[in-house]
Structures are given as C-alpha cells and as structure tokens.
Amino acid sequence: MTAKKKILVCDDDPLLLELIDFRLRARGYDVVVAKDGNEAMSLVASERPSLVVLDAMMPRMGGFEVLTRIKSDDDLSHIPVIMLTARKGERDIVSALERGAEDYLVKPFIPDELIARLSKILSKPAARYI
Image (cartoon, rainbow, N blue to C red; front, top):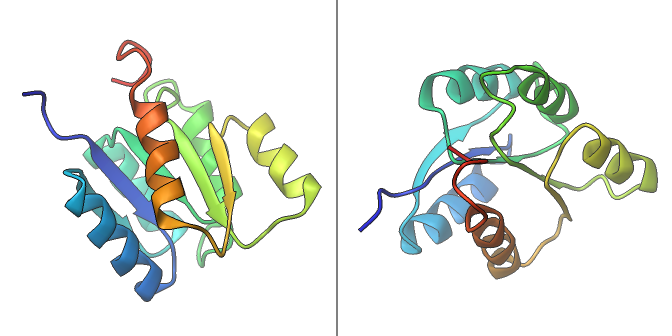
C-alpha cells in the first residue's frame, strides 16, 4: 500500500477545519491544519503536504498571498492548491487560477465534492505532485 497523502487545510473557521479534518481522515488522508496564512506557510515548508486546501480570507496573511508564495517558491510550487473560499467573484476565481491554483470551490460547499476534486488532483501522475 502506498503512503497516506498529507493534506494541509488552511482556514480561520474552527468548525470548518473540524469538518474537513474529520471527512479527510475518514477517507484515509493525513491532515494538518493551519488557522492563518503565516501558519500555513510554515506548515507547507515543514510538512510538505501532498495538497493544500486554502481559504482566501484569513488573518495575518491572506490566502491569495499564500498561494502566490507557494507557487513562486521552486521547492513548493509542485504542491497543488485548491482554493476553498466564500469569495465568488469572477476576478477572485480568475486571479487564483492565474496564480496557479489547481481548483476553486466556493463556500458553502459540498464536502464530498471537495474530496472528489482533491482525489482527482492527487491521482494525476506522481512526478508532478511529489
């Protein structure tokens, strides 16, 4: 059996973190959580997750800034990012995708849809997502 995939979930809503953490662990993923952008950046660097689920509006550093930093760092840019946010404006969605997000989901969301999208991204060839 292959090693468990590690997912970093970044959001400032503790109930949402708990929900996603529970759902992902039930599907066999390892989960690491961050409550703000600075913590997210530290954990991306130290934990090297297989994928990041990222809220746009967080304290200390917003999700768009975190996304930009991940995708502009040669050591981290291979890590796929799914934006999961209440920001549903066309400009926000296009900006996230242009900055390198693999996917964009708007809150409120269907947890099983998030898991399906996440699984699809992680099933792509491993060379891209080490």
